[in-house]
Length: 120
Length: 178
Image (cartoon, rainbow over all chains, first blue to last red):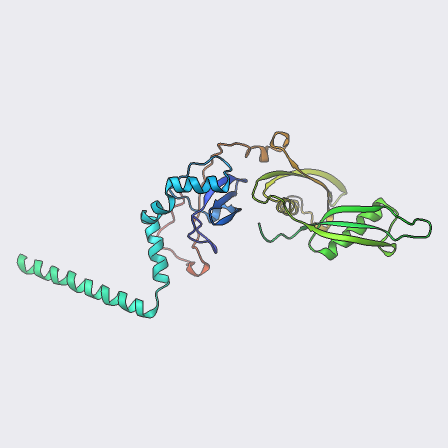
């Protein structure tokens, strides 16, 4: 995953290694290019490809490894989705979130009070 | 992949036709410069040293920028350089692994500046070539000629994704493993 710069959050496949600091990186929606390792964070997802696959080979391998679904279901991926959602809320939506949190807090407190009364 | 300081130009020029020589020989040079104006100037500099022609009685017929044909493949570039050090002129052969020739040339300029304190005006590129991995001479490039290459990113520092999120103090020490 790209962890810095304009492509932050994007999932790319390391296709080859240029030298100690840079890798050739590819993704179905971008032109294959070089990226510094400093901008990349390794995820657990692996894609089975030979060293320099063709674009459609890469797309097929990504499909068979089901990368995007696995990413969206992994805890790291889910966190990123939530981050993005939070950043893109407008004021009304933030108000709605606040109301929901208050409601949830009230429910929790009510249950807690009940349990305390039973205990006492 | 993007902004290069040095662009590769193809400059074609010849002496102006005179009464004695109606069809002077046309010469073509491939050279690196930061812009077209500088490329034309460099062309005359080199041509003056090789042939008896100056800018004042010559003409440039064409100048085109040369772009990388396949910037998506990694190549080993060998660059032959003539540079001026504090004590005299020397020749050097350097190898770089890069996706584009312009990138390799830029690496070369950076390395010459750092390792030998040679500034860009004192460097002349004699020749460049893509070298097949079997013919590479430098261990530094040969160590990446491994199809099953593996190396750990020791001390992998993760930066905040935007400069806005940078803080001087952090609650816990970072985890730099992988």
